[in-house]
Image 1: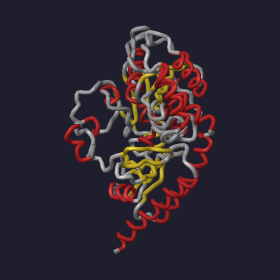
Image 2: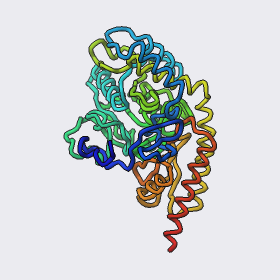
Image 3: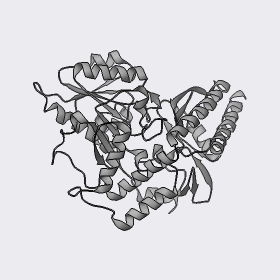
Image 4: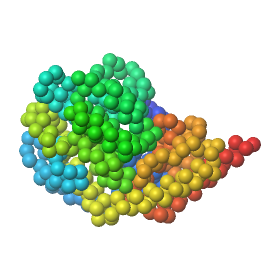
Length: 399
């Protein structure tokens, strides 16, 4: 099927695709013409262990031969064991599995509403969230997303959400009223342009939530599963949230999401209060187990710290060399962005033409999201492509 036929058969909720991707291996993708690309999108922070990792293939293939799906009416051993492993990374609590990041954030919103309806005194339902955030495209998650780019045309949305600037503690605190049940933020805003929540900000939010008896909830859908050089992005700050959403990198390309709830809150959901047909299936859990296996056996979190420091340093050098093109470098680990002075679309196209795939974000940002299995030579290859592309743009500006 050619790229040109997409509009004939598929609803046009995505822009015209520049490529038809047919194969992936490690850090590379191939299109239908046979051209090879270094993949610094990772399916937008999904394929954290690269494409077609042999351990992942073996794990998923073995499970597919045994049992693909089982209703959550019955106990699923793979799900229980996955919950144990994730709790060991996060802290005492319990897991609820679903299929995506939007579903995970939807579950956080339902958890907050359910909690707010059970507290003594006036019922509470309001959440304070960050401006420029992105929490998903379901109606609840969309209501928690401030950007008109995503909201326009879908009003009226769910009420009860207030928006404050990221890293502005005073603004968050000023929005609290008697109907507020909690605060929900991303540790690093992905779609928002790799905007990092500072340690002091997250610590301050935790203090506010403890002081005001509010839920402190973190969306780790894009920043989680090793991408920032911690298992979850918030862990650098040392805070201990009440609830966490995760997805994307957890399945290594197979859909799975989940929420973790602190021990204090694990009895809020009761039989019938929330559910999912496919969430936490044996096959999905086998994919997540394989991802965790690779992260642990290949020491990818430590490697991500090292590779992230190198890549960020090199991108900073490019910013210093081309201040007319690059405004800022943002991020942590292998969740980094070049923030351009102007719209970055032409540079994204140039990088693709030279064999490097990257993805844009809000605020003229270009995201660099390589797999956590990236090696030094591949990082250098990506940097050489970036350097030569920037040089061409810089020279064109001088004419």
